[in-house]
Length: 363
Ligand code: ATP
Ligand code: MG
Image 1 (cartoon, rainbow, N blue to C red):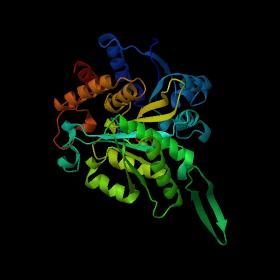
Image 2: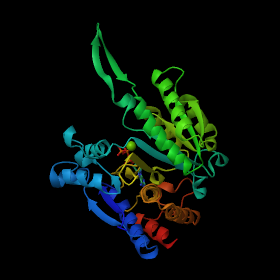
Image 3: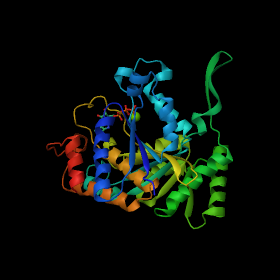
Image 4: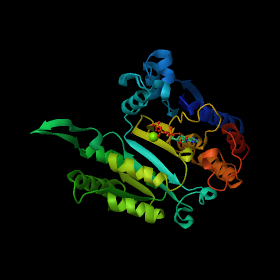
């Protein structure tokens, strides 16, 4: 069988630094686990603009549509702040998301035991926490028409439109139920059907997809405001949460911060299945290019490494190897390895990006 292909777009700022640790781990899998990937490297963001005058070259875009998965570091930086909107580094990422049609954004909130004290919340609330938020990413109020700032009488009015079609709700619901079957088999769908028509349709379609094709998965519905409260009050009641673009934006940031630093948070964005049944997929850490620490060897590579672990699980059917990698991270954290972002009150001496990579490889 052909090796799985992975396109790596390290990007700007700390992107290449954290990605450097991922490529060491990929090499390790080839040597120690007989799991070899055909890895290709290319440019996205500011570095692509520097070379090609565009933040995403057409050839890179075409390749992204062909490979089994794309792993992205981060894009942007102060050097590019004054560029024209059409060539800003972020446009490279937006083009990838749009042309790959990545409608399902997965953001885990997972608590590593060793960091349970690091959170501002009480330890018992988050110890053992493992939830996944599935956010609809390509529709809703961010894209609905009409939108704009209009004159109305003698003042202006700002308008956005929350709009969802049945098929848009259907496909993201399916991706949440599929995911739940590989996890705790439980989905909570969040909307505001009490005040929004789109919420009424959302609830109806999610229920229908469930009843027809996923009756084995436990489904509940919750108003999104209550969901926010429950996330902070008792987050362990959830397994998979599925919600729209706007609520998902807010709820996933909220859930993520239950557990610690930006340097720890991976994400995946999935699209429609290819011919082989695997969805198109882009994996990336939640954090950005962090220009304030770029080039100093201070960045925490774990978010990017966990993004690769998600690729192992969701694109390459290597759940056990993903768990192996996550266990190594749990171990080095338990042993006390901390990059600067994980130092907290107690102080101590932080280790560098590559020392964290060393420790994870050793574990
Ligand atoms: P973007 O607009 O690209 O999302 P942002 O303004 O949200 O960027 P980030 O680049 O995500 O900002 O980083 C915010 C801050 O968090 C950084 O300035 C940095 O200090 C810290 N940070 C982010 N990622 C990491 C990391 N991997 N390791 C350590 N610190 C990090
Ligand atoms: Mg940000």
